[in-house]
Image (cartoon, rainbow over all chains, first blue to last red; front, side):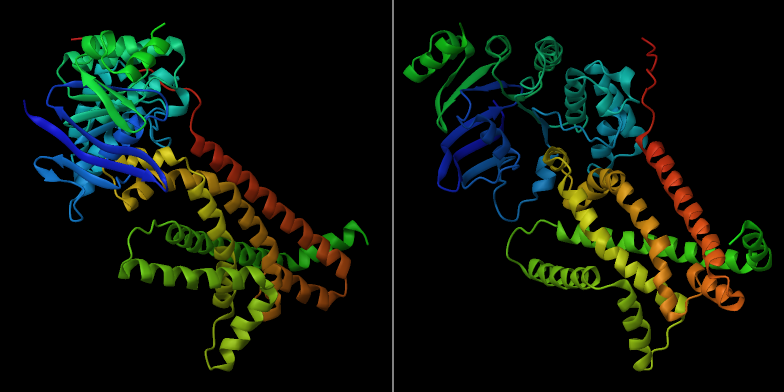
Amino acid sequence: MEKVIEIKHLNKSFGQHEVLRDVNFTVNKGEVVCLIGSSGSGKSTLLRCINLLETPSGGEIIYNGENILDEKHNIKEYRTHLGMVFQQFNLFDNHNVLSNCMVGQQKVLKRSKDEAKVNALKYLSVVGMDQYVNAKPRQLSGGQKQRVAIARALAMDPDVMLFDEPTSALDPEMVGEVLKVMRQLADEGNTMLIVTHEMEFAREVSDRVVFMDKGVIVEEGPPEQVLVNPVNERTKEFLKRTLK
Amino acid sequence: MSLDIILSILEENWPSYLRGAYMTLLIAIISTIIGALIGLFIGVMHTIPLRKKSIKSVILKLVNVILTVYVEIFRGTPMIVQAMVVFYGLAAYGFEMDRFVAAIVVVGLNTGAYMAEYVRGGIVSIDKGQYEAAEAIGMGHFQTMIHVILPQVFRNILPATGNQLIMNIKDSAVLSVISVTELFFTTKSIAGANFRFAESYIITCIIYLIMTVVASQILRYIEKKMDGQNAYQVEQIRKK
C-alpha cells in the first residue's frame, strides 16, 4: 500500500504539559482512518500537528518521502495537499459560498477563474450545496456551512482530507446530512483522516480505527477489532461508556 | 439678533462661507483617507507574527517601536499645538510649507494615530478560525490578510472611520491658528468686518451641522451597502 503520510515519534507539549507522546502511525492511500478517544486525549492536536496548525515539539512527518518538519521545507505548498475541515466550519465570512471554494484555488494554486469555478461547482454539487452559491456563510445553517467547508477543502484536490470533529458543533438533525456526505466521499475512495465521536459512523465507514488515550496510541486496527473486540483495558472502558 | 441680519450676512458673504466650507470638507476628507491608510499600515505592521529570531524580525520590531512612538506623540498632544509645531517649527528651519499642505499633514497624522489602534483592534478581533482556515488552504500571512482578514476589518472599522471624519470636519477649525482659510477662519474674517459675531457664527454653526449630518448619513448608507442583501438567490440546477 502506498503511504500518504507517515508519522514517526511525534511529540507535542504545551509548556510542561505533554499532549502527544511518541506517536507513530501511517495513513495509506485510499484509506479511511478514524481517530477516537476521550476529550483531551490528543486526537485533535495530532490532526492539527499533521497540517502544522500546531508545531510539533519533536519527531517526523513524512510526506512524499520528505520530512516536512525540516527547516527548509515549504509548509505552504505541503498544506495545499491536505484538505482541512474544522469543527467550527471557519468559512471565510467575507466570501459567498462559491468564492469560499474558489479563493484558495485562484490565489494559492494559481488556477484561472473559469477553471476554479468549474471545480468549485463540481464539489459543491457533490455536497449538495450548488444551489446556494450566492449565499453568505451567515445565511446558512450549521450543516450547510460544514458541507460548504468540505467542498472548499475538496476543491483544492488534496491527497488527504482531515476532519476535526466535523459534526460536534451541529444540531443532532444536521449531523446526518454531513455524515452522509462524508460516507459518500469514503465510498469514492478518498483518503480521509477523521477525528470523531460518532462511533457508529466510525464502525461503518473506516478501514482502520485508532484509539488514543493521554497522548499515546493505545490500540489500532480494523473497526471490528478495535470497536467490537478491543484488547486494551482502556479501550474497553472508553467503549463501555460511549456505546451504551 | 434677528433672522433679517442673518440673511443679510449670508447674502453678502455666501461665497466666502461656501469657500470656507469647501476647504473644511476637503481637509477633512483627504486627511481622513490619509489617516486611514496610515492606520491600516500600522495596524498590519503590528500584527505580523514574529516566528524565529532573524534580521527580518529585528527590523520589524524596530519599525514597530518607531510607529508606536509616533502614535503616542500624536495621541498625547493637542492638535492645535501640533499645527503650530509643524507649520512654524518647520518654517524656522527654512522649510516653508503651504498652509493647506500643513493642515492635511497635521490632521492626517493625527487621524492615523487614532486609526492605528482601531485597525489593530479590528484585526485582533477577527476569529482565529479565519486565519487557521486560510493557513490550512496554503495561504501565507499576506494572502490571508488581503483576501480574508482585511475585507472583514474594513467593514468593522467603518463606523470608527466615519466618526473620525466627523471629528475632522469639526476639529479642523483649530487650523485657523496657522491661517488655513477653512470655515472657522473665514467666519472670523467675516465677523471681524461686520462686528455681528453671534449671527455670523450661527451661520457657521448650521453649516458645520449640515456637513456632519450629511456625512454620517452617507456613511450609514455605505455600511448598509457593504452588509449586502439579507436574502440570497437560490440557483436553479439543470439536471443532466
